[in-house]
Length: 371
Ligand code: SF4
Figure 1 (tube, rainbow, N blue to C red):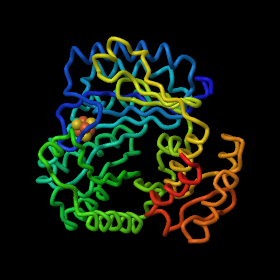
Figure 2 (figure 1 turned 180 degrees about the vertical axis):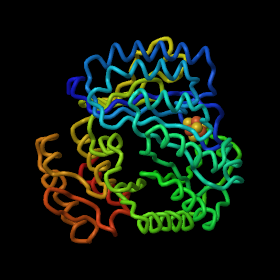
Figure 3 (figure 1 turned 45 degrees about the vertical axis):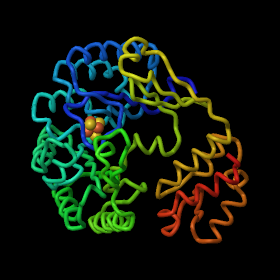
Figure 4 (figure 1 turned 60 degrees about the vertical axis):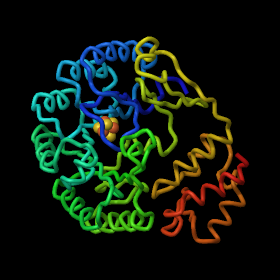
């Protein structure tokens, strides 16, 4: 794929005001001078890699993009202005501590039209345990501030399976989230990463049965409130499904800019330098993995079946020149016979029974592909 056909642009901001106890992402505590050098590096990489692209979506994630002070955020958004002409969805991740009205106005003035906010939980004691510095009221205030500036397409992140979290605490958090009227909700179950604060303290993951019950409870409440469960961990009011993430689940290419970002173009997946300082020295270094056709086909299945609507057989054929059913004949017919997969029109998708055990289904696809 030539660069100007890339449908999605992701920029990773590797700074946070403080570090959450569960986090193992590519990020570090914000420092003004490092951020200035990082912005210069981003400018260089954009000039070298993004020249002429006309993306449909831009996503600035992190890290915490909103921890950049106004002049630095303005500089970043100005660098991205040339790519906004064809953009339908422009998302920026913000943490609830954001209070500066001028930052919110700045985002709106640069065509940002979607905000993703990390609520995680509405419970103050759990937020403290997680090392988060906000409370639920900050989220409500921020949602209202964005709405007042014309950005009402808000997504909230919600976590479950937090240390000692009860079902009642979870239900209160869902009720609070719903009171903010988000257009979209993303769910994350707590994973204990060895290098996170939780990992180092030996915090144990939630009981798998409780975690499964929590997931089911969230699904049923959100469904009852009119949210479409359009991807395993994502819910949206009709018409507000994330275009950027859907592009990834449909296994389309995307350009990843900045230390901590990864991207995919043609047969290649890439990451950047291993550390921020290595990236500042050489922003054009790419750690490239070449994928075989078999690996790409499997990944397309793995990502596509995460969507409620599943995989388009036509798109699969256009991408790989082989019919999906011809690629995995035994697995697809066996899983259909067991009621775990279904086909309708052009699409292959998981049934209600198949979706919760998607990982097991993928093992069968993998075995047939002999990966
Ligand atoms: S979870 Fe998000 S806000 Fe918290 S440290 Fe990690 S990247 Fe930063």
